[in-house]
Image (tube, rainbow, N blue to C red):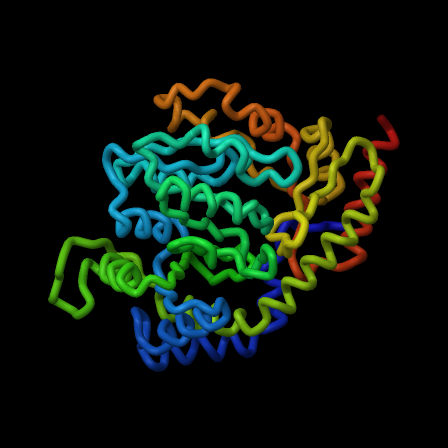
Amino acid sequence: MPVPFLDLKAQYNSIKKEIDSAIASVINDSAFIGGKYVKEFEQNFANAYGIKHCIGCGNGTDAIYIILRMLGIGAGDEVITAANTWISTSETISQTGARPVFADIDNEYYTIDENLIEAKITPKTKAIIPVHLYGQVCNIDKIKSLCEKHNLYLIEDCAQSHFSQYENKLAGTFGIASSFSFYPGKNLGAYGDAGCIITNDDALAERIRKFANHGSAKKHEHEFEGINSRLDGIQAAVLNVKLKRIHEWTERRIANASLYSSLLHETGDVITPAIRENSKHTFHLYVIRTKYRDALKKFLAENEIETSIHYPAALPNLEAYKYLNIPPEDYKLTNIFQNEILSLPMYPELTNEQIHFVAASIRDFFSSR
């Protein structure tokens, strides 16, 4: 039974008429850049988060960069983030002229270890960017307290945590501003690159909107130099259709994860995902750990089960960050886990039959060892 890692076509088929109609409306209205569809999505997303401002932009990477720039972070500054995440989080720090500082991850939840952050803070530190990885919220209360204690900006990377919660509060609503990615494979995904920034800070929101639009609130009136990073009308229309279903899809992801965990209980040395107390894990990814990761991945591929690794190399291990000369003991767990983590197929349309097949295949693998 073939089981793809992600099946975007299945989701499209379930909402095809609405998606096709939404895209046709944008084309009919020639509302390709800005316009009513973008404004509608921004308002809908802000309302869904109970926050004042949502500013659409080109992608989630731009979203982080724009926040950093508009908070005045640049050359000579340092920003702390997790050693195990996608490079967008750290490369945008470097692009401002600041220096990324990596902290190791938690043994149980794989998010940044809040207990290791304070030792990384120096007089040059200006912000902390926790990444709510795989759909799991960090211990954000403690990180926020550290930011308040040391007068640092808290910027949340929510690329994988749409509508995740901690203490009944949505991820993305704890800091000065938060970035979101709507890359097609995300829980709330567009049909191309797209992203947004949310904030309750009026002045910051105004600067962000201008910077993302060539430093301009009005065409031809440029108050400063900016960049071109705008959410386009077609992506906004697609996201408006999908936003209506995000909570339903999230519950399916949670149910799928629960089924996986029950079926994989006490299977070989497999460690299934832990869920932080008083939180809502939205399972952008379902990530297991095993010391036999590479052999298991090969075995599953031979059985037509597609898997992935998030992420196969700690950021400090990448060639891009060799110049930082970070000692490996600074990210011991990330170094270990990069060789053990494996992401199984996860999406709302995944069937119970497919999950049972994946779990049975994993059990078959371990029964022969």
